[in-house]
Amino acid sequence: MKFIHTGDIHWGMCPDADKPWGKERAQAIKDTFRKIVEKAKELDVDCMFISGDLFHRQPLMKDLKEVNYLFSTIPGVKVILIAGNHDKIRGNSALLSFTWSPNVTWLMDETLTSVYFEDINTEVYGFSYHTTEIKEARLEDIQVPLNSRIQILMAHGGDAAHLPINFNSLELSPFSYIALGHIHKPRVLAEKKMAYCGSPEPLDMTETGPHGFYTGEIHPVTKKVTNLTFVPMAQIQYIPLAVNVTKETTNMELASRIAQEIKGRGEHNIYRFRLKGMRDPEIDFDLEQLASHYRICEILDDSEPQYDFSSLFAEHPSDMIGFFIQALQKDNMSPVEKKALHYGVNALLHTTDERS
Image (tube, rainbow, N blue to C red; front, top):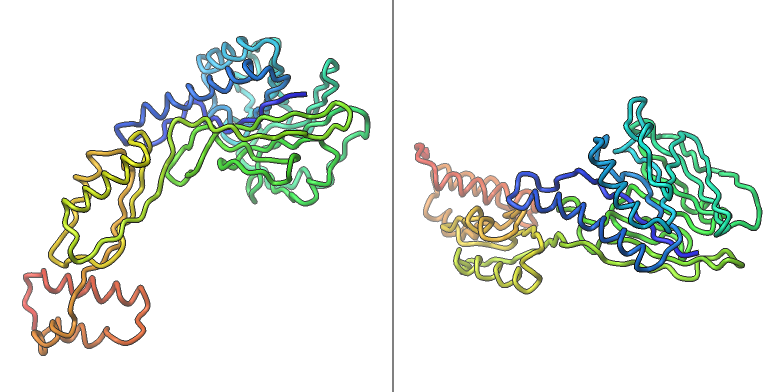
């Protein structure tokens, strides 16, 4: 039995909505999911498991129609879904009355249910969210019949507010494969047994690294996963980079270095830069200018002005600057104390108030 494991699509979300590329990211979510559906046909899989949060919020009828059309293009693939905390089942959910393509099965109940596919001797278990949070460990000591079927578990959660999971005990369960959703970073928790698929597209700047889906195969006799492979699929990556500056670093040099970093890693990716080191006290880096030229979602300036405190104290022995340096400067200063000293001196040097 061959399968694709995906989830956390968040169809309808617009990452970086306040950025020029926001609409492009929203479309990328839909395009990448379409490519995963196409992969299901290309790889000739038997099942596609979607482990919650297919939709970012309660889907509109047009969203259901769009997604259902995609599923109808792979009639030979059994699509099994559960609802997550974002697309939870409500009493008035359009999901409840929508007519899906014959190859689609939603496990919509709030309690564990299953669907059995005789032609591939596979039974898939799961349940959907009906509330925003599930704080009970519903998978603890889960009981399923011992039989000759391939048994799959689909679940969405893994933190204190969203279905707490004891992964060690779950690993010992009789399931052939456990398809998890909710955590957006792909991760295998038990070799060829249990995994988080991650979101196919990164959804904010904290979701670094590769994103895509898993494909696997289960032996019909041993009922063990013989192969589990991660397939990268995302159109972009969020890349965090640190740039060290010195007292000699100028705005033009900084812009040139950042441009080189971006070109080397791909201008289509989105970047988060953190400036570190000691800078010339007379220089203020033009961060907005840098961000306007490239896909930079954030620039954090953690650099510090490099003051010669001994010379400054000699120049200001009896005014506020001198008093401030004398009061704060000491050996073995903590990072917080150093920042307080640097920022305080910088403010005093630039103030127009009387320093006495």
